[in-house]
Image 1: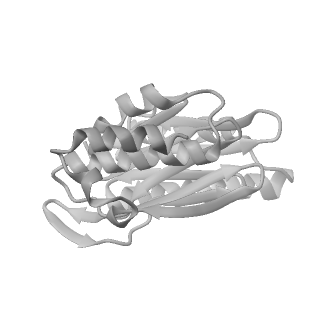
Image 2 (image 1 turned 180 degrees about the vertical axis):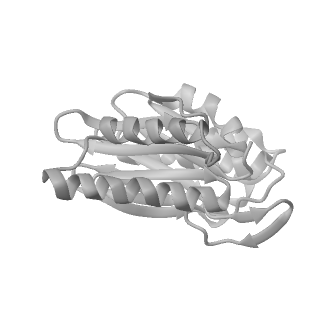
Length: 223
């Protein structure tokens, strides 16, 4: 499982993606400003982790083919169509000598279908989902998503749930994922939200011995 982490959550009228900005090779920390977000269109974004070269090449391949589709037909693929196109190409490459080690979350907004979040793993399996993650950090987030996600989730509430997830990752994961970039996709297009990092929290939130304070933070964050 990758040391990097990407998270996604779908709200009532938006989808929010968060990704760490660490680039590492084996146990070597290389840089702290590597974005894992890739803009596919005005209303779709792709978060990808895996082998560094594979993620850049494959996401660039997908983005350029979706751009070609838009030029040829005069309209963008829906998020569901983009997810199926991405999944099929990844699955086809698995059966060749050019296998891409990439795991992805695709977020999009369609005027008819509304917001959509698609989970795509490195084996080419894909499904629409309400919340998901890839990487080691996602292991700490499943229970938080399950507890706080609702269908009528507003953008601020969805962002606060991701803050809880990042706080739990930074508190418990031995790998230091210092910074998370956050992007939202809604009816207005794609935009970047405030990044989540240790400066976003009080010191006691990241302290393991003060679990009661963290529980109080959780309850306040969703209000």
